[in-house]
Length: 167
Image 1 (cartoon, rainbow, N blue to C red):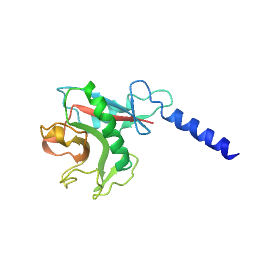
Image 2 (image 1 turned 30 degrees about the vertical axis):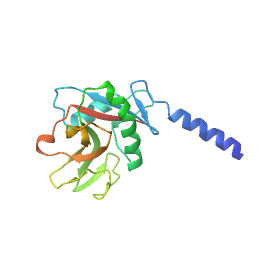
Image 3 (image 1 turned 120 degrees about the vertical axis):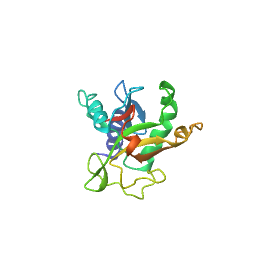
């Protein structure tokens, strides 16, 4: 296969991958949807089930995961625009949990305790699942879209929003 053919094929695949299902928005090279239930108390497990219920055709859907800080940054930038469609609320369940004492994504990829995706003071020993926290919104300041991972405990066992990713 010639180099030109490889470039054309790679470009076509990138374009096809960048087209998200209609209910999803694009951030970087990923497709996300938000399930928002204002006033509801939804657990991490319930959110995961709701996200999986969005699957159709060739698209599988689950709670959103981020492989690196660049993916989280791309989502945070896209969320600045998308958040206008939702009531202000700083928390969203994501696909990170503690399994056998270690933090990992849904696919089993380990998440370092020193990752710069964790918010200050997180993770901690008592947490078992993770959510995104828009730290400025959570502190009643104007949001600039900075999202961090936080872990659940006590009053943070329920949220009203789930972040889903289609693949």
